[in-house]
Amino acid sequence: METITKKLQRIQQNIPDYVSLVAVSKTKPNEAIIEAYEAGQRIFGENKVQELTQKYNDLPKDIEWHFIGHLQTNKVKYIAPFVSLVHTVDSIKLLKTIDKEAAKNKRIVSCLLQFFIADEESKFGLNMKEADTLLQSEEYRKLQHVRITGVMGMATFTSDEQKITREFQTLKRNFDELKKRYFSDNDSFKEISMGMSNDYLLAIAQGSTMIRIGSTIFGEREYH
Image 1 (cartoon, rainbow, N blue to C red):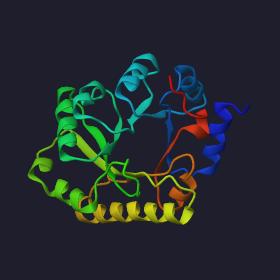
Image 2 (image 1 turned 60 degrees about the vertical axis):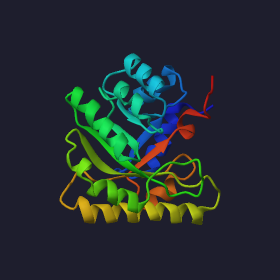
Image 3 (image 1 turned 180 degrees about the vertical axis):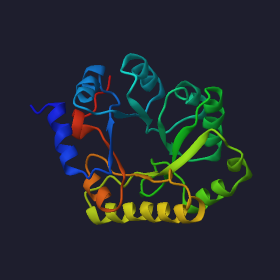
Image 4 (image 1 turned 180 degrees about the horizontal axis):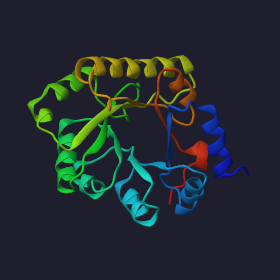
């Protein structure tokens, strides 16, 4: 059986230097994360607040933890002290909560605006009009402890590569539009988080700067 180290190395050889790899470690035991860590991986993604908090407490402190799941406002306080990047901001309400909890911890928390680019009802995210409303709002302008550093989206789970490519192109267009309108002189607005185990090469071809890969590194998810 191929080791986690070998799988990581293979992915790293496949991706350009400017693309960050988020190892999606949700449901995986600490031992698997440590193996990836010892192979040089430092960015890990989790989608459950309780699991993320536990792993943060248990594992090396130079790990950069990304939150990649749907985040409820009442859970933000648990991850605000340490989370590096929240990929899934889809409302001003959530952004304000992150800002408030980050302020309590004397931090600025980086966030991505999540866009709905798929045709699956189970996915979350903004459309362009909602993103404009958020970024033009007085509420947003008052925030001092969040930094929007880019966008995130999930393509439809399908084997139709043309469809996936079109959805990734939509996210790239959204990023370009936001950059032009709101972040033209802001160097930190640079991330396009798109692409997972089954479609990350398509995502990179369409401009992804950050891929979220779980099963290709760790094997299939383990549910307890």
